[in-house]
Image 1 (cartoon, rainbow, N blue to C red):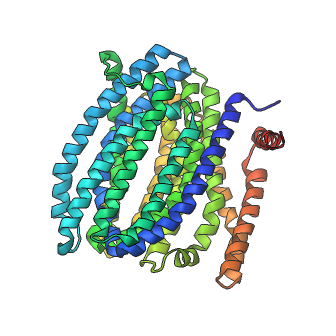
Image 2: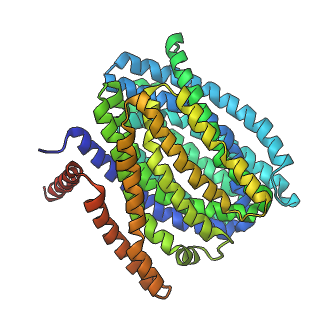
Image 3: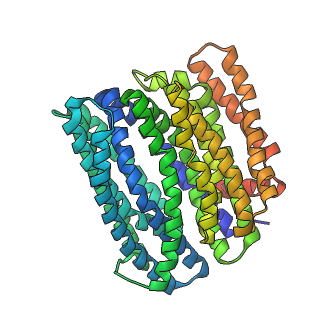
Length: 510
């Protein structure tokens, strides 16, 4: 029995996105180091604070774009061309409205918060304001790009996403070579150059979509009934995004309030490193997500359940292979990567990797909920859990806790939210709660714990250095792969993996 076309497409798209991640990750590690050296820890931290404030309001965009992408994928699953054209037109029209609202909020409430509560040196006020306005323009272009990214993803043309992302990474590398030669305020110039990069990225997304997909040739459109369905989904998606604000940008502001921009720099650097590993999860799930929505549209609930569990489980395993050696060798690798490692960076990175693993297990459940189109009860339960993160963190910080306690609170709360999400999906998508808890979450936690034993012993027994890094990485890769294959996969999943490797090996030889 050979791989189905759907499985083959998932494997091919995953390999394409993985290639993109490897390129962007190597470039990202290099560029982050140069930017930190050129800007300094304080300016680097201020950039993350400003980005956090702007990013908080840009999440208004995520609600409508998520609804649009869901409906595009749903229409493709039903093979309904008329619905597809209508969804993109209405989605793009609504997106422009959301963009205007987001810019107005950023330039009023966001600017007020920046002036009133953000912590930065008084002499840097003008620079911070310039960076804020440039960041608003950058985010506005990101928001305009989202419908085009959505239609590319729904059609599963991941190679286009990969090439455009690599072009963006190369441009960031060029910026790093330009930055040391800048005469003037490097923080403002850096923000401006990133804006120009976003202009190019928007242009590429738009041109590719318009040339390849008929529905992406934008025209204003309106359908009251369809818009109400999309807006209802968008409203509850927005509620989830507001909860997301509370445990991401809200924590950034708390760290800034209690510890200042230097600690924001530590959290930002650790977040970048953890996010690079997290991209391996994002790639696999990005390849799986359209299939999850399409199977729901076709009412193939058993197939959808298999996709959700495999997406959760496999992506966790993929993250684990990279996370184990990075967790154990965090201090040495950060010292090599950065000239001056800010305090708390190692702790933030290690806990951040655990947070990434928790998000990895939960992410397919969110996709499944979006696919159902009925988010109200789901969001009310999950949001009530996630919105406790900032208040609990604030109380702990008020009693003198270290800044990394915020990441610990985040990790534990995400685990609770994952259990609640799986429980709610029983009635929404007919997900088998017991199967998910044992096969996806339970198995992944056991494999994760066991994966640290052998490489941890090697790490403990040898002196710090590149030899230990290489040996720990080799042992972690081999032992984790063996644990995954023999303890983390079912028989049919092993067969799919073998067939995918055989298929790609035959393609290499042909």
